[in-house]
Image (cartoon, rainbow over all chains, first blue to last red; front, top):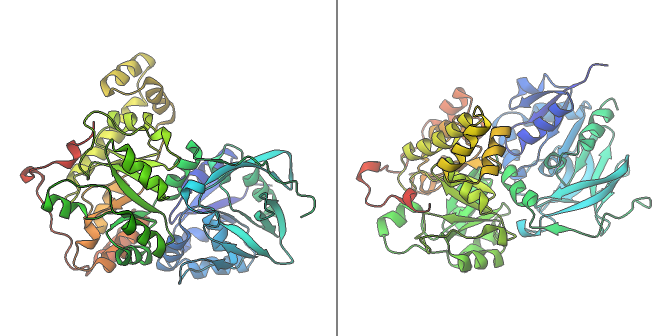
Length: 195
Length: 301
């Protein structure tokens, strides 16, 4: 099977790091800024960045509606940090006008671990990646406070708070796999794209 | 959740990866200077990725003269209370105590900034000693690498703050990125010479030769006053922009702030740039660099 063509939402944030990670896996990538770009991709990565900014730019660039439609139709998506917030069905502590797609049935609290000085690295056991723990980097990270019945929790921090979840072909993490050389979460997303 | 083994108990904070990582998350965004909570809210509502809390914007510092210092903690905390995006603040060059106070206030990034009056004429802050990340200004690659060797996690061009004149920022960006391009074609022997000429650590020069980029994100600051200015510096290779006086010294800050956010995200799209540049009112008044009594970019070394 030919490798899928994967878009990276390129409105703001660590776009380059995701593109680099996907290219290392030999995947063709497209930076998605407008609806035309979206039409060319089989799946989408929503990167880390400032979720309230990206939410505004989605509207300004007339990308919110087309993207919501693609996600409704079942387009695979992988959201990290801000990307997880945008894919969630509910945002806690969000900006007043902040939008999300509801592509995965979770409630996510923004900046749940505190300010930058509380940002941290740790090793996490992730279901589906049994070989070794994933080295996870959390930056002003969100946390999942509620998961719907269809949602599978793939990893959690000590307090039992989920930080990686999957529902069908939608994968989300509170942390940033794009900041580490470990490509297994990107691979997991690509493998899961077929559904 | 029963079959989830808990993650390792060890959580490490203040690492290089964590500190540089926040800079990565700000890429493609606009960081706005604000002097109070009301301005911070306007900035956040316009789509800023972070705000820089300071007592006076650079153009006022320039006008007022005197010694410019770290902001009042009460003002910084007031801003932290009203916005949920990262809050940065400035410390004077070499002023360790101001930086310690800012870390105690839990600001998200410290700018060791030439816009404030330097406190030490020979030494910048040892930034490795802090858990909060630092951004520093640079006018050329040597200066950028010296700041990185001291622990800076983000570099910004200095430009000439408070002038509304982008020419110095363009000079600094071209100098830094131009030298990076040259280094990528240098042979081993030439790298020794580059390190000597730049007065920069050889390992950092060798790393650039290999990767073709600075080891930390490179943003632009100093003199950006319009959406077109933001697009220009992004096209030249900046990864995000700081806008100081350019927003709150324009005739309609709300409109200007939104326009610069849109222009930075869509810096390669002239149609969008034309649309967002329309009807913004007056940009901040600009100053000719040749007429300045004080060049802030000459502070720091």
